[in-house]
Amino acid sequence: MRYRELVLAGVFALAGMAAPASAHVLITIDKSNQRMTVAVNGEPRWHWRVSTGRPGRDTPSGKFQAFRMEADHFSKEFDDAPMPHSIFFTKLGHAIHGSFDTRHLGSPASHGCVRLDPANASKLYALVQQDGVLNTTVVLTGSASAALRSAPVARTETRTEDVPDEAPRPSFAQQPYGSSFGGSYDDRYAPRARSYDDRYAPEPTFSSPDYRGRPYR
Image (cartoon, rainbow, N blue to C red; front, side):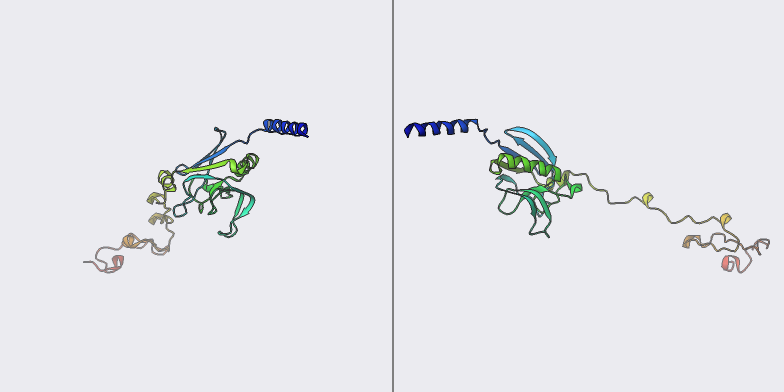
């Protein structure tokens, strides 16, 4: 019996030596530049754009251990919003997950989670699943406010020359006979177009009481 126990112990020991040690996954997120770095056993593997929480919904800073994974998770707080390949790292529900709102990646836009492109979230999920969620550390630094300050300012003002003007008014020479001059208040004293019938009439003089619609003074 003693011999059998020793043999079994030796088999188990050899099996333990042959089994590769689980790799350590370190996920570092810099909120100031909205970037994630994934390292395995200290060797950087991936660099990706992310979207962390916007001001008022900021993603917490600090060092956390991932503890739960869900491949098809939906937010219970925000209208069942899809959170594919979620890796949770706080008890309050903060997670790294895929997001279909890819146009905002690179700027703070989430409700507190860390958003990734869906394809990148799938790759990260597979890595953490392979090496063990409890072997995964998440470190967050920086701030969303710093990211917004360093982002290019969106141009919202419009220059006067960029505003299309109303259709150009026809000049006196371009107006058809019988048309009225549709000018502004400042053009009310501009020469008026003459109709076909009066084009041969003599020009009014300053002594005409009806010259330009007013008596001479």
